[in-house]
Length: 196
Image 1 (spheres, one colour):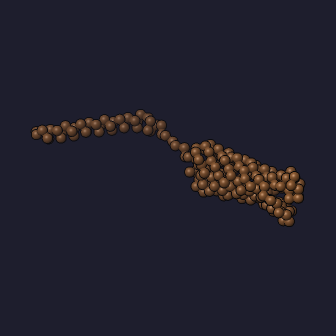
Image 2 (cartoon, rainbow, N blue to C red):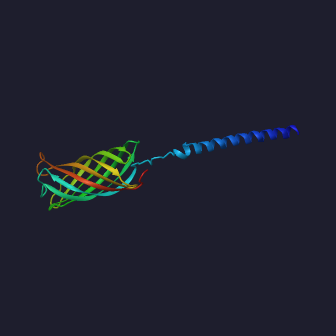
Image 3 (cartoon, rainbow, N blue to C red):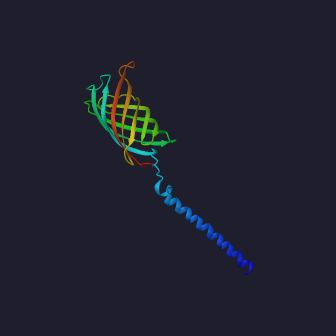
């Protein structure tokens, strides 16, 4: 046998030995446990980045006697955008409109920034911005709206939530007086983008 043939045979033998050891170890791992008996499951990442749109139902509570009743039913819609800055922090912008069951007041609305804290499917947030109140026969200057809420993702693209907001408007007839309203409402929201 020539030296070249002898070297080739030796190299092939060594390769066969390494392959047989590798296959034996793989079989031991599979039969022994970790791959077969202890599979690794990954939890899907639940994020909040994206546009959303939804509806809400609740009540408006009048502390200034500007509505017909102290408690008025209201329902409407909300839309906005969230941006997840990290695993925990979320910022966003939301606009909403609530139609009031009132003889004179037509709607209550706002445009608000949101700052949230995320823990998987749960998003708790504080919010604040400009509020609007529309009457049939009277123009009310924009005021402000502040509050907070919580949303919970129940499916890929859906969340349910609850929110409370405080509205303050200057009385057009008396600059020293303010109109004050509270809202409490339940929300159902569709998220475009889901669990990303």
